[in-house]
Length: 332
Image 1: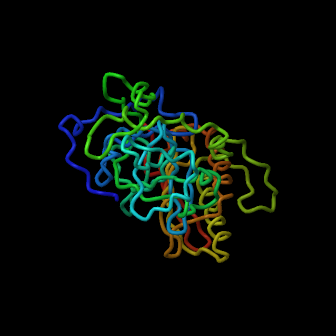
Image 2 (image 1 turned 180 degrees about the vertical axis):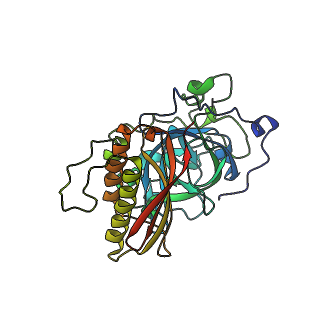
Image 3 (image 1 turned 135 degrees about the vertical axis):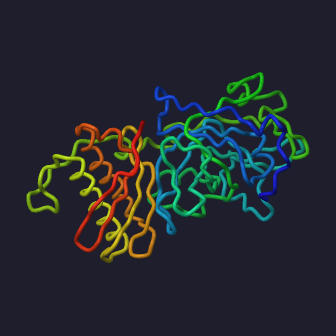
């Protein structure tokens, strides 16, 4: 696996529209999102749609800087492919279907935009994303993606908001234990209610609270000899400082200077970083893990500047010693 799924029933071709009202776009960890359908995925994932959850944090990888950790509202179950090493998964994540076959239970997915030039952004609808199961929850605490802690799941479509769970039992009934307590087999396109008895979503101990990146702390005191030491009075000043901060983080990660950079970032209505893509001297703009905290501090300065709260996407540029920016999108 993954195997090509059988054609979905007619009702599944028009899933309910995700909720995107401004009163509830955020969850405990971050923006609410939903996977409503797949392009390619094993059949057992089709039966568990929609996959509602929250974007917990960005995690840079060796190949790109913008992997996102999606914490699921309900556990997800999959049949491991032939040759899958079950020792990679904790024993309590092993479950059996009604025919005694092993399934693996996960509580999170790692995802990224499928196509070059695209990234997760506020208001997204049916964004094509690559999906991987997070089979080791310690990934949530890692500074960089450890590909040994994930397993490819498929290709799906991500939208902002949550999609109501279908069926007479509703969202609660769909994830509640059933008498059989075991999932259906691939020959039975049954509802998700027939899956093995799930546990609850990860508690804060299993998935730690986001660090400084989830809040907008006050800007730190700056020494008068520091780069860009003058007090920031305009959004333009702050965004230029953001470009310098990202540049320094990439240089720290590489141990070499960055001469040219074009980086596209997105932020949510609370001015928290939600996406990063681009190019720095011909490579992905991957900074150190600490850089995300420093960028959050700089973005926090926008909170006190009129009009800045509407910023949703910015392109940051570096050319030699010069930095510049362009606001490319705003929240409605």
